[in-house]
Image 1 (cartoon, one colour):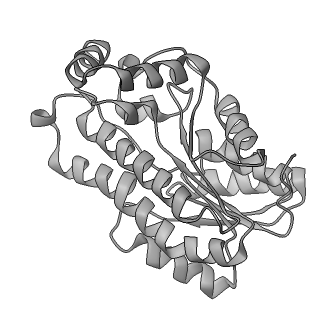
Image 2 (cartoon, rainbow, N blue to C red; image 1 turned 90 degrees about the vertical axis):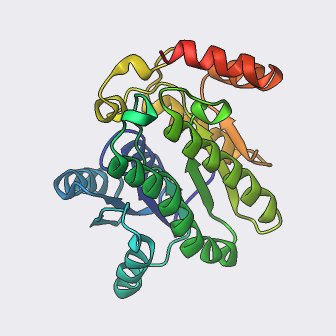
Length: 261
């Protein structure tokens, strides 16, 4: 079964490039109107123009910094003012840092926690009741293979993604009878701007995937009769994420520390 999203509006954060842009194109190809949110307005407008021309759907763009404390309520108010109802949500916005925690910029750490965790939770709380009431959409939260073990050298990033994974799986259970399909997607190394923000490709573990591969996997899982609460993108990544859970915590920590050194 291939889900049809005609008559729905999908809100996608971090939509100006990478996985967010790929999710935008894929949902538009399935008939959805879009709301695209990111900080880079020019990139959003270019993407919206291209998608509207190719797929004939309506695309609304909102340039907004989602790391601010009031971002979810501000975004909700902007959509309410435009009369736009959201039927599906993809929480993709986020970033990572690499380096020793004791040397990291406290303001940058706070920004990462705000965007990766607080904003994601706030946006989910704003819009999930609408998704449940409508009963036909999806909630996709982007976690990471970093969610499956402690990540020395990327301690806060790994912890934020572990939160996203746990949070999303719990919501999948809570909403299991609502008709909403809830999925945490955990990519491994993916060819996006993520490593430009991190500042080094040394944080990559395993074989690189493309955004298209990750998004196609997400749709395959969402198209299933019963959507799982989470999925790891890439067979090698999935195997490693399973194996690491079978190891003693100290062993998993040592392996992760050596890989990210």
